[in-house]
Amino acid sequence: MEIHAITKFVRVSPTKAVEVARLLAGKPVVEAISMMQLNSRKSARLMLKTLKSAVANAENNLSIKRDLLSVKSALVTPGPMFKRFRPKARGMAGRIRKRTSHFTVVLTDEKQ
Image (cartoon, rainbow, N blue to C red; front, side, top):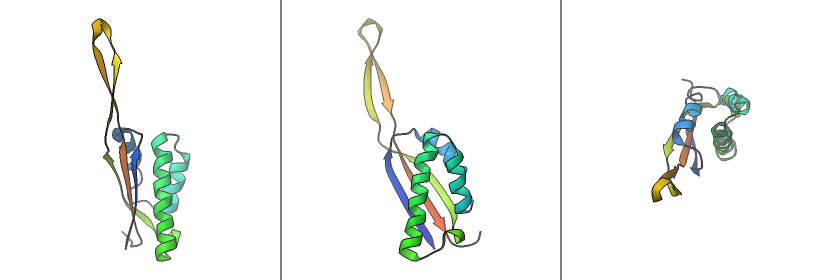
């Protein structure tokens, strides 16, 4: 059975978050949580929040023990961009793109 958790509009660049999400795929949940707690990156802290939400969904809605779960996939997709402008030389404007991400964590209770 697959259990999903989604976090939307996270203020971190998708390219930075994908590096952290790649570490999770195929790991048992207990190991994945400890990896995210030890990682000092902002995207790891936000991915941990999504991972804990998926675990809570499994435990509360489906009564599946945490020890039986493993991470099937951790996806990061780009969200909308906030577009801002900064004054530059000779009256020009430089574009600033503040990127957002959507995190999706899929857990499974099946052995891989």
